Amino acid sequence: MHRLLTGLLLAGLFTLPAYAADSVKIGLNYPRTGNYKDEGLELRRGALLAVDAINREGGVLGRPLELLSENTASRAEQARANVDRFASQGARMVFGGATSEEAIAAGQRAREHGLLYFATLSYANEVTGQAGHRYLFRESNSALMSARVLGEYLSWHMPRRRYHYVILDDAWGRSMESALRQATGSTDRARHGRTALPTGLVRREQYRDALAKAAKSEADVLVLVLLGENLQRSMRLVHNMGLKKRMQVIVPNLTKSVVQQAGPLVMEDVIGTEAWTWDLPKQDNNPQGQAFVERYIAEYQEYPGSTTASAYSIVRQWADAVRRSNSLDSETLIKALEDHHYSLLKDPQQWRAFDHQNVQSILAVRVRSRADVMADPFKQDYFEIIHRMAGDQAAPSLDDWQQERGDSLTLQ
View 1 (cartoon, rainbow, N blue to C red):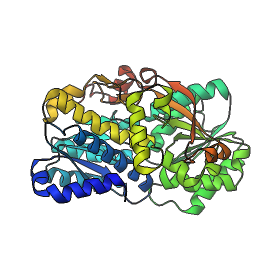
View 2: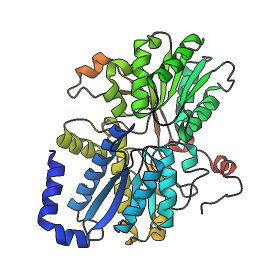
View 3: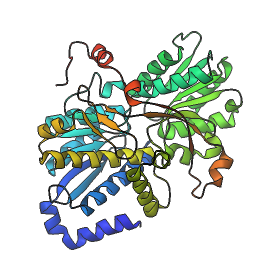
View 4: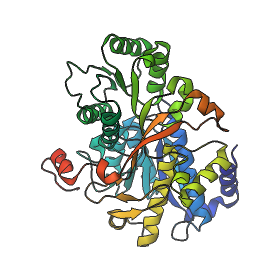
């Protein structure tokens, strides 16, 4: 068992009565099973590292921080029920999720309990757009932010191409397709085709039919708006069918765990976006980010991914807001977070006041060749940064946001 987990368990065994009574509790909603279980593991690792770091520094308001965690299996109804459980256990904040539906459902229930909810891996524009409210913050980027950095890169380097989209028919899939079509000028569905896969269990023949349709098209760019095991399975078929030989594959939201599970040979040369990579702190000369990377490597003997970094940053930022405001009250913390600028694992970021979206730079990345990946000591140096867009350029403007909101022009 990893040293961090062992240390936390031993600490709990020797100090359980006082710790249980005096700790400040936070709740992690994460998929331990299901389509996004690999991403869930990364979320939990990032959360544990943050809790350990905060407790080494003296805890929160002089009290130890305790992480509660529950499996969502990537189901919105379970994520909502978990929030009830966290609230009954005295949690003061909840975060996590691997789908936008989870974030929206759990965020609404958290508001009913007077708890802040921080969304991770929840890319649909609706999360901080139409479904946004005062108690919901999103650390991860929106679909629009990914689409804008990809659209700019593709317009410069691959202009006038024909696209074919394969999407998961959920809030993020539809949101991402719409945003990327706008950003790449591929809105004409007669020319730029699509297939929508159902949510839940997707059968192998459904993947194969969708990709066969793409293969028969005249497209030279294949966009896979998929995540988790859905993406892993479809990419293996893409590789076996030889589609990468004549089509550039775009995966709008890449993660370390997807490349790791599908394999670098299957994923090499795929283009997508990330908010953070393990070597970004070194490139940007960021001591805090580099210390986080070194701590993770020492604990797990591998590189951290952006999913881990997101969970770590959320816990650290919430604890920082508690410290700055000297309060655990949600309303007080909302005021402390809104329009707060900070630097932690990368260049400056901001919790924007009008929509509670985290505004940060977004990276377009390409998966390195298998030969380059295998030459790395951990065989996990997956991403080459090929383009970067500033957060205020990538994020929707106030006017964009209010157009989506309609009559509700402020967070309630």
